[in-house]
Length: 142
Figure 1 (cartoon, rainbow, N blue to C red):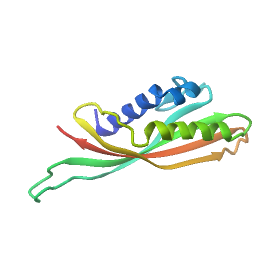
Figure 2 (cartoon, one colour):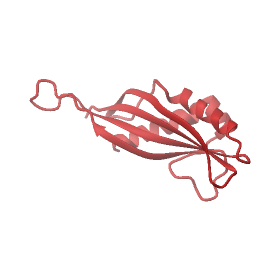
Figure 3 (cartoon, rainbow, N blue to C red):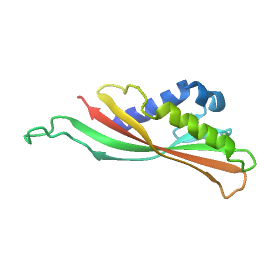
Figure 4 (tube, rainbow, N blue to C red):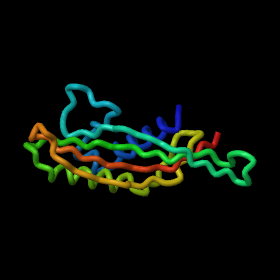
C-alpha cells in the first residue's frame, strides 16, 4: 500500500464514521462513484504530493515524508439549491480539519488541514458541487 492509498483510506474512514457526514451521505463515499450512484454523495477526487523530507545533518533522509493534497468532491442534486451542499461541505470540513486520525503502517499522519472549501452550481442546473481540499503531512516510517 502506498502513502497515497493509506491517506485515502483514512479520509474515507473518517468521513464514514462522522455522525454529521454519515447522517446525510450514509455510506456513499466513493473512490469513483458508480454510474447509478444516489445523491447526495462524496467522491475522492484528484490528488498531488510533494516530497517533504527532513534531511537532518545532510547525510541522507532522516525522515521520509510528503505533503499531499486531496480533493474531496461533495455532490447534491436538489433543483440547484446550494444550501444542502454547503451544509455537507461544512460537515466534511469539521470531520477532517486537524483530525486526530491514524494511517495504516508504515505511515504516520503528522497533520491534516482543510485548505479550501467551495460550493458551486453545476451546468445542469440541478446539481450543486462542493470541493474540499485537504493537505496532509505524512511520514513513511518503514
